Amino acid sequence: MSPLRDSQFRIVPGLANSSGYVSFESVNYPGYYLRHYAYDGQLAANDGTATFAADATFKQVAGLADSSWVSFQSYNYPTRYLRHYDYLLRIDPISTATEKADATFRITS
Image 1: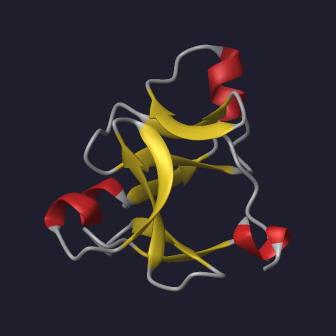
Image 2: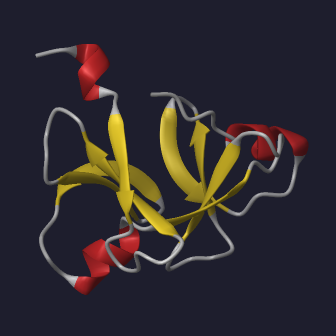
């Protein structure tokens, strides 16, 4: 088991919509995706349902705090963005500068 690899994801075409949307598949656990459940992020096996696909799909947009980075808009809750908060991932509406920074990510390879 590798803590580093457990924290890594592949950006793949969106499960609910592959046109302009992405999903995050675990590097260490293929077939497991980052999805939201009750607005909280979690790693879960793809169960093949439309709900799972929608919960695991995000639109990659210019970063809300820095346009050279990226933000991820929820597919099924488009007013909410993926953000980190209190050491966890979740989807929230974003308005303040702190929230924008929390919802802005740098993609690395």
